[in-house]
Image 1 (cartoon, helix red, strand yellow):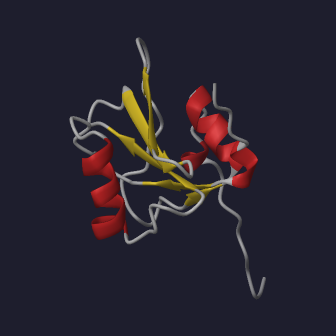
Image 2 (tube, rainbow, N blue to C red):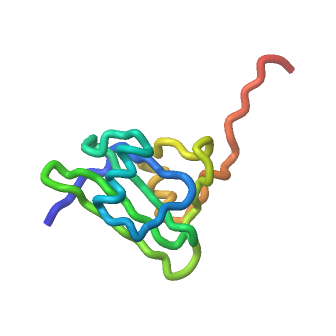
Length: 115
């Protein structure tokens, strides 16, 4: 049985919808060619389908690629639509995402130079 320490990984989200009929080969090619990331890095790459009920995560674990899938029976995943909304996620944000907490719509930090 294999266990990984998620706190050692980086997490990248692919905004918008992804055709999740793709398996490991299709998703890893997408990471390299479209997202322009090193698929062999210590990173997890997250994808979601159009209905926001299916999530896939792909990563390299030193001996091969792994694919995780989570399907919601009720509700939907919060998911960004644009590159501007998407970003590298923290471990806490990944936990919130998998729990259904929509931090994408949380209040953003404001900064002003004058009153």
